[in-house]
Length: 116
Length: 106
Image (cartoon, rainbow over all chains, first blue to last red; front, side, top):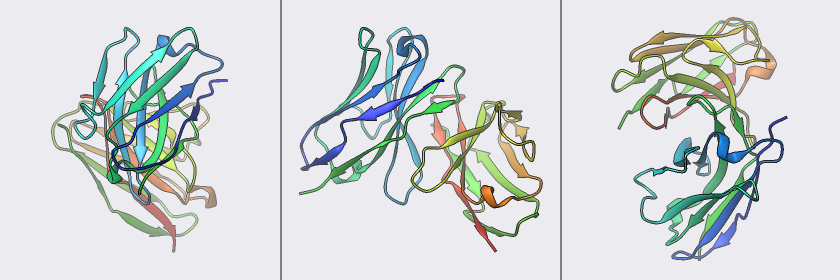
């Protein structure tokens, strides 16, 4: 069974940094597209970033230049390095797997709170 | 960027009702559309992909239709487990979600 497990969320001050992890026991993260999707409290879903199986990346305009997506194939883990965090980055962050464009498997989410 | 607009934002319905949610894309996305169900505190769950293909394990009361810019999600007979928020998502050009439709108990 495909399982995605996020970690690394927490409380951080505006301007601070945080790194999220998404571990994938049971399948290979480098074989599919892997994305981060976030959901601010009481709001809808927002796609944040993708890393393709070949290693290319893409970002939403709202995080471009501040967030970096990466993966470590030896650890079978994907990451999201978040710098220059703002209050509007407060959200639950989900990692999601995509074989054919849509997101077929999701993690349980990790909460990031940006506040002083 | 492709914008996705869902309607209605909230829908009040009773068990057994037929429910339809509409999703419109700002430009043609062919059939590259998915529908998700999300319950409070949980991750979204895939229901429909490629506009009308039912994900494995999803009850057949869920169906999707449409192509181009207009899409619908239909629940043929609403069940107690179906009260949730539903999102459409285009994956023709990167990814964009609709704002969501909350299905509430009438």
